[in-house]
Structures are given as structure tokens and as C-alpha cells.
Image (cartoon, rainbow, N blue to C red; front, side, top):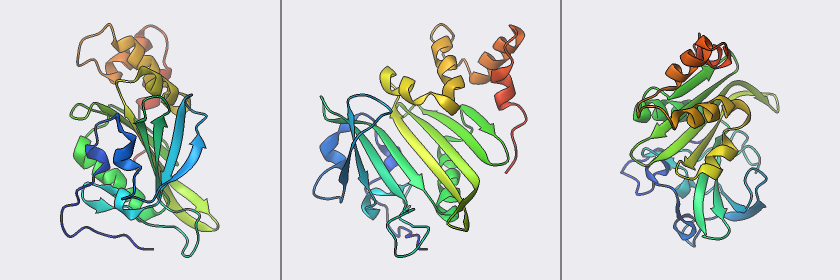
Length: 222
């Protein structure tokens, strides 16, 4: 498995992009991408996928890697969700399949954004959410610690970078494991600027709803 490190500052950095951005910034002749088709997650968007090493950069580190040599499967990749009408990218989705790149990704996110706005963890997986005030993006990150793929023990990750200003996108992606954060965002509209998820969870617990506080209490330490 190969992880390419940058010796000089790379011009492209996924964490510095401010969404939404024009489709042609990421889908052009400079990068190798392919159209995957429409997504079921959010209506009106097409997905473009790439394994191009030039697109797989965060904080001057390359995430171009693969779990199994000489195969097209389980290769670190990136997807761009493009709105059909305005041709703008509203969602970036990065997947990693090797322990080395997954751990590096988690470390970079913690170094750059520090403590998550939301963190939930058990022995197999952790979920983190950051709201980046600089880019006005919101990031959803899941880290699976005990995956076994074709008899290979590995750690995998999924990072979604969303246009925080787009309510339709945020609502579509705050389902399932991130549903608690959707409830918090809806409640936060009428609260003070620095109203945290912990405050929200504590208030709900006092009102008799314990699921929010339970989700973030006593996280498993990896």
C-alpha cells in the first residue's frame, strides 16, 4: 500500500474549499473523473467520482491509496455532488479504506478543527461533526475501527463536506446516525449564537428526553 506524501505545498486542499463551488473547478480536463449518475440521497444532484491522486489532498497530505493491490475495488476515492440546475458542487464525499489513511484523516480533522461540535463513539465506530466558521461548511465524519474486507482487518472512514447554508442538503444528510444533530440544528435557530449540542442535550434531558445526552455521554476511547 502506498501513501504519497507531499514535499511541497499542494495547491489543492479539500478542507479549504468553500461550498458551493462551480462544477468546472473539480470536474475538468485537469482531473480524471467519471459520472456515476444521480444520487438517491438528495433529489436533483448528479455524482461525479474520482480516484485521481491530484484530487485526494487534505492539509498537504495525499490520500491516494488502496486496500488491495492491482484491483479497482476498495480504492480511496472522492465524490462530488453537482446540482443539475446551477452546476455547483454542494457536497464532497471522501472514502478511505486503509488504516493508515483513515487514522491520518482523523488526526488531520482533529488538528484543524479541534474538538467536534458533536461526538459519539462505541467500540466499533465513532461519529464526529464539525462546523467550520472559516468556510461555512459542515463536516460529517465516521471512523470504523474493526472492518474486515476480504479477510483483511482494516479501519475505514467516510467524510462528507456539505454546504452548511443549503438547508436541503443539510437536512438530507442529517438522517440516520446524524439525526440527533438535525434536531439540534432546528432547535438552535431560536437560541444564542454559541448554543452547543451539549446544552441542547442537557435541556432535553431535563425535559424527559434522554437520548441526546445518552448519545454523547461516556464515549468509547479508541
